[in-house]
Length: 151
Image 1 (cartoon, rainbow, N blue to C red):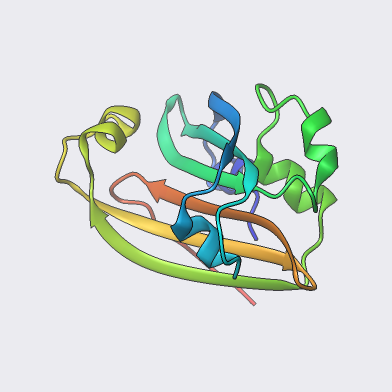
Image 2: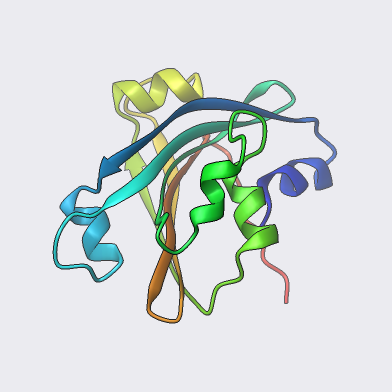
């Protein structure tokens, strides 16, 4: 799982981070289903915007299971991204990744500084430790985003 800050810096750009929101909420059924849960469960929801050269780069809408990752409650997510903290501190044993495209709705377009209806590349990733859910994130990228994976 890439650390978004490093991804931006590795392409020679300046990384920035904007915290949007954080709340403990019941998961939507679709999020519970990604974790294989039969009903909504209270988890932490975080929205954040990653920047590249002061421009929107990736918007992430993330749910974190605080039963599995209680330490996240002590992290200042206003200044440290959940992406980077989780990659560095919570190893996973299983990961599901889904890629697809959508058209930007009004909210996404406003956050990403684009026009509603533009095509967006979406990465959804869900991780577990054994059978215990860690996080699921829906990451929307700005038009022109390229994903490079090297093994």
